[in-house]
Length: 403
Image 1 (cartoon, rainbow, N blue to C red):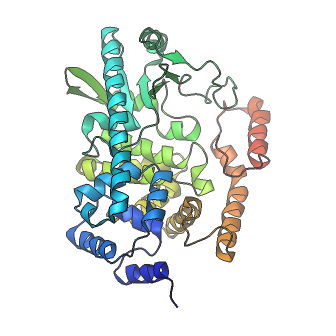
Image 2 (image 1 turned 90 degrees about the vertical axis):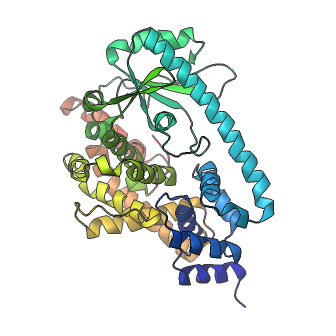
Image 3 (image 1 turned 45 degrees about the vertical axis):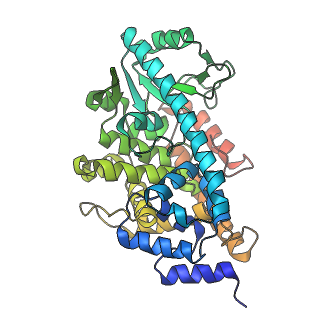
């Protein structure tokens, strides 16, 4: 007898939809949808071919739960859902709307205070989406903190402004290993007001190590744009730099590329940025920036991954690469394994083999990563620190442990 879920997976495959829940979730989240895809999705939902418990579990693990709710409503798929799912998910979404409104109000207050102190600021990542309506929905994006870039010369005054607004800086914060070397840090300790979920990271650089070198802060300042919003002048990176920031942030800071742990939320933001700003993006410049820092294959693999998961058209200006396609497959294996999709149980033979393959790839490529992605000053004098970094990663006891 065929199990119902397995029957559903086979039916989805015949309909041209992914058999696995992770891939199906990605198609429900993507902005690259047409009427044909929506019809196939609606049919699969109405025929009971979607394991909603697994899908919502993965969506929240990937911090995409509110986005899934927003997309289902916008695409007209929400009425087709089982009734028991609707109330809980609506409440979760509304909770995120209220949370985001609190973040937005806090950001308006901070930017107004910075303007009064003549401090120029640029907003990164989730903070930027408040002012360009990237997701066209106030509750779609989940935020952990607000990333605000200021010039190094304004850093002390910006810190004073935040303190004056009631923000307390984390006195126990240690940036990475706490080593005072020039490539190791890119923001101050996080700060927040008591009894508030709003956390702010005050940046003076973009990202650290190789990611920071591929996304240099001086270019961000040179090419940023200023928009007017409710009487405020808001600085945002150029669309090209937002896409570049998303790419390096998704692949590098915590060894995501070699760990096979690229987050679905990052993939979706890449797709939304391309859909919104595709007409003004230069794909050749994006690729050359990665290539110039030894990241050509990584960039192309990320592009292949976004294409597979979201249906985003592959830029015709860029080359296809078998190596990049292979890496995209590896990243997908890691994402599916880590998401807890029951299609590939970790304790199954297949799951064990996948885990062994991913771990083997990670440990074989860790030494090269430790050299190509140093968080330390250049030169022979810091050789012991680089060796320490590599040894720490190898013998940490947890191959998925972040930095």
